[in-house]
Image (cartoon, rainbow, N blue to C red; front, side, top):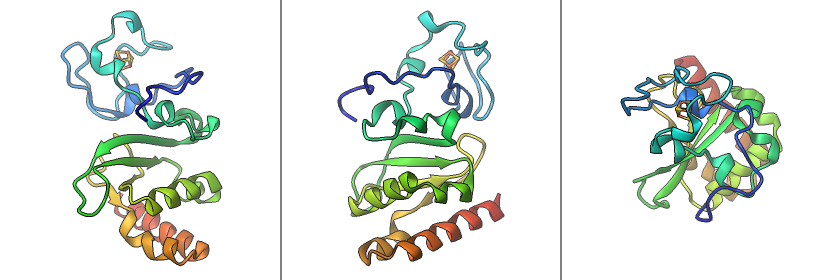
Amino acid sequence: MDGGPVPGRSFGECEVCCTVFEIQVPEIAKPAGIPCQHLKGGCAIYDTRPDVCRHLLCGWRLIPGLPENWRPDLSGILIYQITSAEPGYASAGFILGLARGLAHLGDVGVLGFIQNMVKQRVPLFLNLRVGKGEARSTFLNRPLEPFVAANDGNGFIAMLADIIQEKQLKG
Ligand code: SF4
């Protein structure tokens, strides 16, 4: 993630970041979950867009190992880096947005990404409604660690499914 954007990966038609995030600068001033006023089949002020937009790159643009087909608008997966203060874990972690809920558990790439983060003690927080008012993301590492340590794939998936269903029930 320190090397800048992944070469050859571009936003294309993706407008997820311009919709899901709250942006406070006066020329945009938008709440989370609402499309930016400048979105008109792409950014209408792209050349003069504010700095906050220039730095708004999701994990798919920044992490070389992620699959090409994880572009957020195509996959429902939105990853972005955050700082974390979870004791005993790395200070840089990720929010993992899974807009399609349980359906993502059929993607071995998603399962492998989560397992790797848990193994490396990189804090990972699950959010099913990124930018749409979900009050709290769920810290995934702690409940999944026993299953990763035991190499128990079925238990790992069952625990993830429980976490997703509980979040869906809470809305
Ligand atoms: S100004 Fe352009 S880049 Fe920034 S949020 Fe709006 S549409 Fe996206």
